[in-house]
Image 1: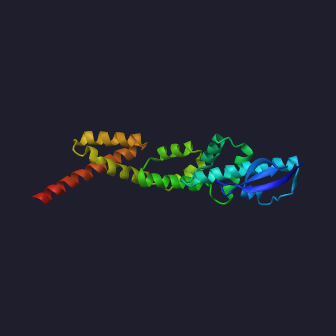
Image 2: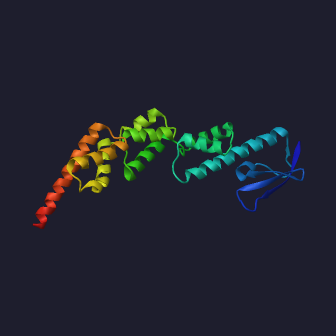
Image 3: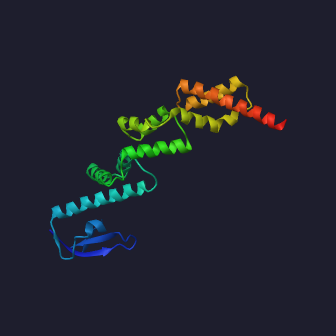
Length: 216
């Protein structure tokens, strides 16, 4: 048994307090954990252990929330991050459940975010997106659902539009090989690569003819 003899705010962190038991510093606590404590309260060993467990969970939650401020995360990313910070499985499971309950952690929403970012800034094939999301720990069924809304041909077309200028002065065959290899590295299938390389070359050729007509 031990008696709480002081609860003092930490100078460097207003969200934490120092807990003193029998006039000795015991450990720090998040304010959310310490809110129901009072000076003079007697704590059993079980009470103290429970406080320490809650404190670990609150620290894990704060750590996860901090990570989520940068961008959405998958459940697996949060779990891996907290494991690296050496939080135990019980605390991690509680944190994940709480974040899911308030929709701050949702693998389907994360997958949609990831795909939308890729489509906007760096279009990729279904295969490449699938691999990236699997690496993030997203379930296959979730990935399948999200990728249903992704137009792979349109993605390849956007990639080609951004890259084709690099080989615009090459003969047709060389141009198609270069662009095709680039699209292949992005994971696009053969049928789409063939369609887009032909389409892009035709667009460049038409553009060159139009420019010639305007100049003459």
